[in-house]
Length: 258
Image (cartoon, one colour):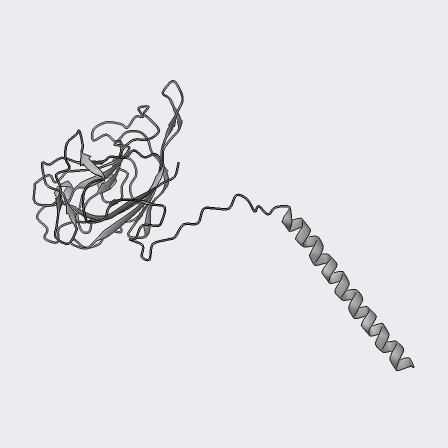
């Protein structure tokens, strides 16, 4: 009989302990549920199979087939050359090319390549740029072993922010920019309400970490803001200074973040 009583007591203790443990877990779950958010659910986006591929919600601006998404900056047909392999190459003197569509805050992926044969140095070596809203430039330049002013090398917010590191590959190799651009906002009187910002990864390496844009890019003098619409086209620069260092492009896509 004593053995039976002891066994029953043991079962009771185990049951009580299990009940207490379950009660504590239920209480914790109720507290945790107070900070859980279930709606709205984020839109499902299919990522690309490779880092170069556009995700399902991106706008493809260049895929090696045509320049239908672009025109010459200032008007007219885009005059850059599409090579047999689909590579898009700057033609000196043909002008910069601008998107037909306007954008505000966005994520941009773009791949570029400087010529394998080096002919010049400094700012003459594969010079181009991505001008967001036609005003804020992330510099494109062969900066592998190329001395120039550091706020004008590859990955720089031109004349404003030096890149954190130099992640440039050798001339002739494809490079990638993945850029997060936050457009500036203005008050009704034209004064800056919220400055624009850039985060830039060059070949997968962070080179601009959510930096403030100081204003419209200037070659000479300080940068100042000028009020503008919330969406504008961006352009790629024809800046082949000597005609012998043209930049090439491929796989350009953008995700509006407005």
